[in-house]
Length: 222
Figure 1 (cartoon, one colour):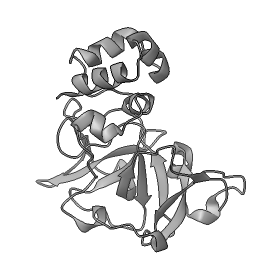
Figure 2 (cartoon, one colour; figure 1 turned 60 degrees about the vertical axis):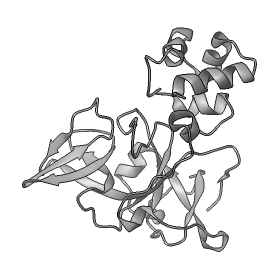
Figure 3 (tube, one colour; figure 1 turned 90 degrees about the vertical axis):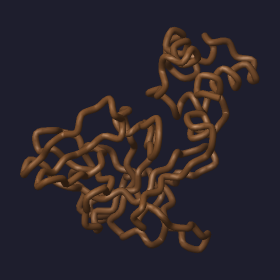
Figure 4 (spheres, rainbow, N blue to C red; figure 1 turned 60 degrees about the horizontal axis):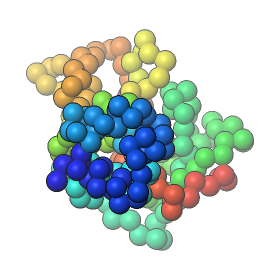
C-alpha cells in the first residue's frame, strides 16, 4: 500500500471529501488529488495531513511507525520517565544567536520535554521545508522538531543545524566530509548538496527528531 492509498483510505474512513480534507490541511484540492493519485510522494505538509487524518505521519508516509536512528549512538537512546527534562523551542533568530539558557528572554514561553542526558545548552528547533524528507531510509519531514546539542562535536554523517554566513536563517542538513571537501547534504535527493568551506558554522548536532502530537505538552514555564 502506497502513501496515496493510505491517504485515500483514511480520508474515506473519516467521511471527508477531497475538498474538506484539503481545507483542513491548508492545501488546494488539486494538491490533494496529486497525493491520492500518486504523483506527489513526499507531501510538504505531511504533519498537517497526518493530523487531519488522525494518524501518525510515519505510518502515513512509510506504512509503519519508524524512529530516527543512525549507526552512531547519539541517535539511539531509551527514554525513561525519570530521565526527562525540558528544553526551549527556538525560532531561527534565537537559534543563530543561542548562547545557552541564560540568553533567553524571561518571556520565552515554549518548552518541550527532552532526555536528561542532553546537555544544558540543547534546544528544540522546528523543521521547515522538505529538503530532509526522504522516500526511503532516514527522513525528517517538515513540522518535526529536532533536538539540537551545541555541546557535541560534529562528525562526518551527523545531522546538524548549521549556518551559512550569508544566510539569515539556519539550515538543517547532514554533514558529509569527502576527499577533503565538506558538504551540507539534504536527505531529499531532489536537492543538491551544498559545498562549504569557511563560510559556514555548526550550531549543533541533532540528537533526536520527533513529531509533536496533541498528547505531548509544550509548557510555558522554565
